[in-house]
Length: 239
Image (cartoon, rainbow, N blue to C red; front, top):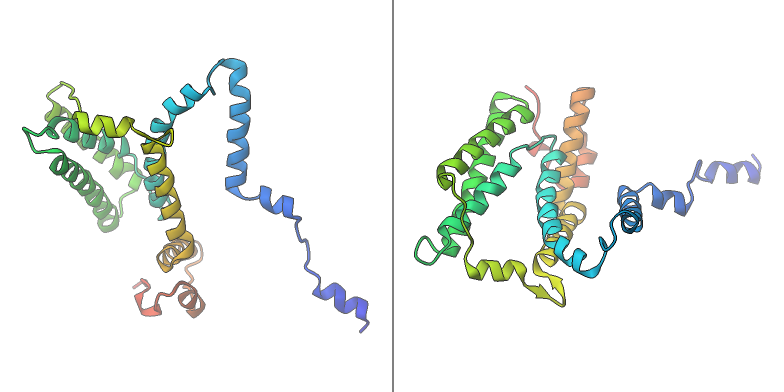
């Protein structure tokens, strides 16, 4: 066996360049799409990328990013949640209507809004897990219940948030809306948890295991347990 043959065997096959590897990342493609959108927008709407327009857009983008994080976690587990609009609307209504000092108070209203909407999510998850119904159908039903709750709580009339909450939502730090900074911090925290901790590794392992069992009925071996940090006895198994 010659040295040339050994070198050929040791050389990696079909190795992509650094540029091709970078372009294969979904985040890179998303960034390119956003940059292209910003480049084209002034051609159709003058001033759409001005400083005032961007600062006005950031709070809404922050809300969308926060909701997208939750939906991402749901999709990662193989589900789909269509009740998010109703949950966001109900939570906002509870805080606006009962957050005044002469009612529940802002802190209590925020806690009730979080716990109440989380209860709907937990019930939807239990129905999907226990009865095996499609998440699409269950969350549509939850959305209808949430819309009904909004109508019952509001009585057909809107409400305004307290001045304290309004000033916080419109405040800025270093010229950047506080809500945008909060959304960025939340994205970073979730990314670190999913990529660099055992919790994130176990979550990814769970998704891969469900996909493998659904397609081939195979079970993950001890290597998966060592990689994720989960003991093999913790892994769910079929009867």
